[in-house]
Picture 1 (cartoon, rainbow over the protein chains, first blue to last red):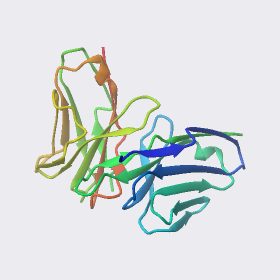
Picture 2: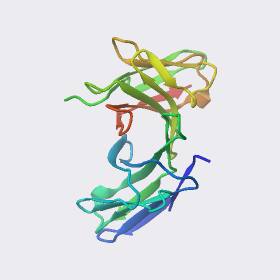
Picture 3: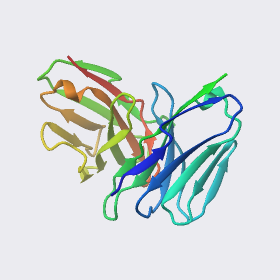
Length: 112
Length: 112
């Protein structure tokens, strides 16, 4: 269906370690968005990927869209305590709808 | 440039009362989304509106819930005859083109 699965659900890392979260869909995606939500906060838009195989970087964050446009990943290099939060991917609903479907999220904890 | 505003930030209602949640989008944004989030869970799409029009309400319960986005003034999410199960955080997001979304701080609704 339209669901997006994210793995892992939780991740604890030592500060300085890398972190990756994956977003998988059973159907082809028109685009994929990534958001970050700090504990007690609201989601903040990070990026949108549209093209097959696209790779975008924002400082220590690297976003990738799969060649088949069915999966995406977010990789953080050398995590810092400020990276703590839940990372969500979001896909547009099926053609003809305007809603966005959010993934289950990956909760990241960074141990100092 | 003010971000998305939501009020109230916290709302307590007794069972059977009405809850009215307000959302003022960012300046120049004519697309508004409403989401519901339970603790430690993802965001569930409720409704997507443009000025004076409901575009997609497929995520909204058929009864007791309604939304509007008038020509003038904020978008309103109204929940009539609230029940304990309505307790959640309700986020609105605005968008300039219906793609990337900018979220407000949310309204935490508690039904006693």
